[in-house]
Image (cartoon, rainbow, N blue to C red):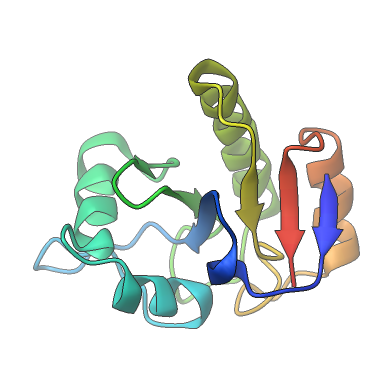
Length: 141
């Protein structure tokens, strides 16, 4: 895993978006703060919050790649009202790595997942991710 300073949304390649597992009555995933809020405002046609919401309703709170936008959800919370869950982050990281391996994805850019509105300490999260991620994973902060 690498760490760089920069703008997550200026990177060329796949981007991971931290998400939760709450779907509104209109079928859209709650993406009301931080990186998720910005992503929901940028990624349209299809609306990313609708794609992620449908995925959560049909598959559960698991990573969801959207090939048209080169983004993948990275579930860090069960609910937007809670802090991020380290076990969910570890499960999401493992699933995303397996997806990257099977789809030959060479790079994935992500923020410090679980650490902004998620309330976790980056040193703790980094330690958990380093056991899963290799150099294809680039944390942008």
